[in-house]
Image 1 (tube, rainbow, N blue to C red):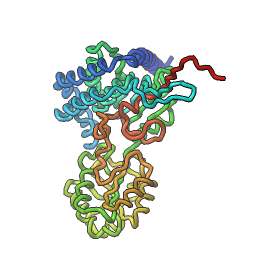
Image 2 (image 1 turned 120 degrees about the vertical axis):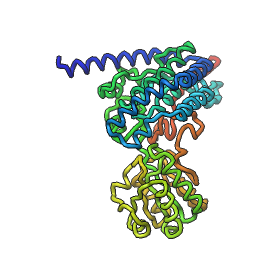
Image 3 (image 1 turned 135 degrees about the horizontal axis):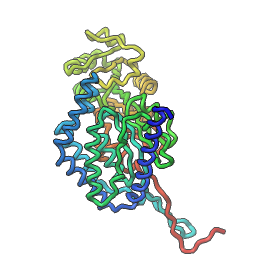
Length: 427
């Protein structure tokens, strides 16, 4: 056996063991009481607070490595943990802990003419595999949401966030142990070998029920191409903001700047701005000036370039690019219909926003655009499970099967039917 074959065999053996342990933990977690799951999450939150210095030290190692590798500023921002961001993780864990337990809740119930009483009841999915890139907060969010919904989880984060993720998983496992629940309900893949991803995509011998990819186009494409288990796809955030001819100028400036520049590296950040031609002369310059003042580069079509200095001419590729940086592509459109057509042509169907005072325009935008999240007069940066009241999210699902939009605890459950009778038989 060659060295490469030996390594692959070792990875396969290790991952198979992770799968077996996750399946055993999932069986126990599926019937765990709401009180124990609540205690585990509260304990994990306290562990993050108690070990804040250790987590920040681990993150500092990841950050030094990222700088040494020449990672972009946007990438570094996604990777960075600070006191404030750790406080946010603690708050998210506590918020998820306080959510109603979805497991066992009755979604619907009805009686049949023959006297049968039927209930549709939420159940955990089982074992969830989460494959994501270097955002440490995903480690905490995914682990907590899976725990709350009664699922075991196998986490495979990006190699650049290894130390940060290990520290956070330690806190989650501490909470589980403290609550008398199996620590193996949350496991982190202990190798950066890409072969581990392949093993997960093959399902670990039937021990993974669902894969959730969260990352760039190449990661999601690989998952969708190779997965042998169901996938909740989180595609890139090619997000659009459309400024209608009825838009209030002050509102448009405020929303566009926030949608693009609040955090440029998140999937809800605006990447393309569309402006109705009727308000190009009144709205375009103030919006662009506000963006430029915040350090944003503008890539515009011919109409934009004619009116705004120092605009980089937009290419066809710009309309298809998720910059994840302080860059935005800008286009003038002749009508609402043209804006809808542009979005349907180029969007990843993640999030789109319309800024308008015309109710009919808003309804048309909402009815005709097929994206997971649609916003009216609000920043696209609200495309987030925490902002939706879910406590956090495991990703933004852009597909149409089972889950769509922010994937929270309810989206991490399936259901079964309970049928109660009094001796009925079928004629």
